[in-house]
Image 1 (cartoon, rainbow over the protein chains, first blue to last red):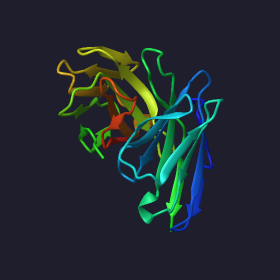
Image 2 (cartoon, one colour):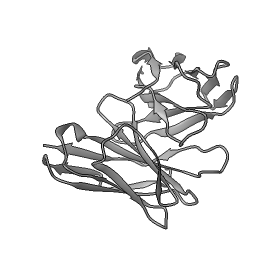
Image 3 (cartoon, rainbow over the protein chains, first blue to last red):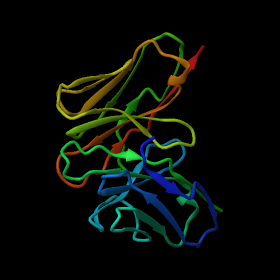
Image 4 (cartoon, rainbow over the protein chains, first blue to last red):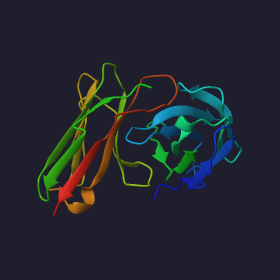
Length: 114
Length: 112
């Protein structure tokens, strides 16, 4: 196990609703990255948080937002949910500035938008 | 979004056979990673490569960082049933944030 935890494990929402997903990083890690993995695809980078600020963003609209807390845990918020937002959402923690910065993934939250 | 070119998409092999899969890109990466993902789980890191030309082993797994920095391969020797899963390559570019760019995965099936 990586020590990265995510909650909830599964979630069902309807179009237009809002959702908050949570991630606890591995002990000693200071950076959290979020990825979206559609069925049959590799993970796609959403954004990364370091020192409680966004530190890089992929090609996702502003309705995808996040937070990082002083204990390095993080939230991913998605507003105005669309059917295409149905996916596995993965968070990965790493130690930024530690040299060989390898990302370790949590088990993911599977979101279904109806 | 951008993804690496990973091949093959799927493989069906007999237990005991060796497996090879690779990943290519039109861009240079300074880190290559190989992950395995089981159904309902997040990707688990298998091997990390940080230098061009580097060849690294982890048990029956061997991976290499291509000299051009635009490709990597993963070999699995003497496959066993628990090797079943989806294998992803991921690359990280020089500079910028730490975002990883992933391939679409290679689905491996091992017949006992």
